[in-house]
Image (cartoon, rainbow, N blue to C red):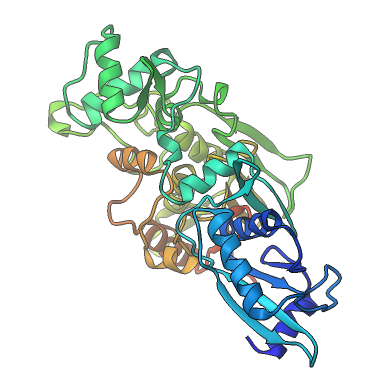
Length: 429
């Protein structure tokens, strides 16, 4: 980094990735800032810069400052790190020390020593704070240590799962033998082996994934489950929505058993007519029903005199957006549901949380395969809601919208959510 680059960083002020500090702070304070930046997206700690951006410079020799920084990083951060260190001369008398922390630190969560304890730190804007239990769980999940959808849910039992859907899944979807409905012990063994339940000190608990997929009432234990759907008259949110519905229940529908000529799968919906062969809708199909009820069915007579119809949006694209949301959202965010919003000019599906680790919008457009909730994804794949190829976004959403009305869907990642936006018609430039 040269002086001009340093000057620009200082002029821009502190941010979620930049912290100003003197070099006479306590080691615990420096470790706290290091851990917080590592747990977000890395960044810079500038030693010798005041909070107001004035430069006072290092108070010790640069070599001594470097030794001190490395000691703090080794002894006061867990797991220990080796940050990149450099100095930039500000003027004849002042030198600024720069600690650069990587944006792809692999061993999250990073903790800072406080007394005899190690505390996980997170960065919120320009401030550093102790992580909540949910924030810490999210960091473990990002590092691949604790898949959240396999986490047991306290207070649950086999009775909280829908036996009809479980039998439907194992017997009809997976075409395997399953226990008798009354054999609770055998069901607990089967569900534990397939990670839909987990054993904790002799007690069998439903996992997050098991409850979301097959729970009788997932929201009893997971308030973030389900979808909040609304249809608005205009192009902005309005209290006077023309329709609102909280979509609740298990993710998957209850399907009829297959007849011999149908083979392995029951009558899973491959089209989106009003008469899809479903006994009881799950959240995914509820969302499609809400869209059908609240968008227009366009009709015209083609050149051959035949009546043609289509929905305002290709329902394959809508379904893919909804499935991606329920399969890949961040369920550690317990205060937000998925949002399905219909406006006069667009449809939006908003998932809480950022994209899973290593996933970018460009990678999604190319068909990149990665998952935050692997258990949920694999079960939805068994139901054929998800393609094995991972090409649902480029094929069904992007290509589907282009063929439907020539529009480009928006895929937008923000700080705490991901948005899929489908346009009803082409926008004027």
